[in-house]
Image (cartoon, rainbow, N blue to C red):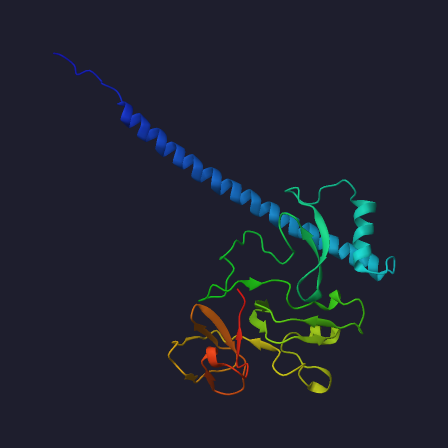
Length: 254
C-alpha cells in the first residue's frame, strides 16, 4: 500500500505565517513600549512633585528669596549631574498658565499632564475641547497673603470633580484661591461679574439660521459651526453667537 507523501508548506503559506507573526510582534512591542512610557511619565510626575515640595520647604525656611531661586539652588546643590526624569528629560522652572510657577520636563511637560494622556484622550465629554491643567492656582503658589495673581480666560479645567471655565480676566488673593472657582471674595461678594462659570453638562446646538435659543442656563455649552461656547449670562435666552454684542457667550479655546 502506497503512502501519500507530505508535500509540506508552500512558499505562500510560509509568507502568510511570517506576516502574521510580524504583525503580532509589532502589536506586542507597541503595547509594551506604551506601558513603559506611561510608567516613566508617572515616575517623572512624582519626582517633580517631590522636588516642588523640597524647594517650597527651602523657600518657607527663608533660605531663598523666591521659589525660582530655591529651584536653582536645590538643583545645583543636591541634584547636579543627576537625571531625575527616567526618560532623560531636563527640568526647568517656568511660569505656567495664569502666572502659576511650575517645574516642567522637556519630555513629559508640566506636572498637570496625567500619565498616558494623549491628544484627544482628555477631552470634555461630548466635545473635542481639551481639559486644561494648572489653570486654578493652589494657595501654596502664592508667596504671601498679599500678592495677587491675575487669571486670564481659559479652556475647560477640573476643580474638585466639577468642570469650569474662566470667562473674564480678574485677580485674586491666596484666600480667594483657597475657596475655589465658586468662592466668595471679602464680604461675600463674588470676585467679578461672572468671571468663572461651572459647566452644567448640557450641550445644546444651534443652526446658523437661528436668531436666538431659549431655555439656556449659565454654564450650558452650545455647539455652533464646529465651535463650542459657554453661556455666561443671567437670562434664559441667548442670541446667535455671530450676533453676540453683549458677551453672552464665551468661546472655549480648544
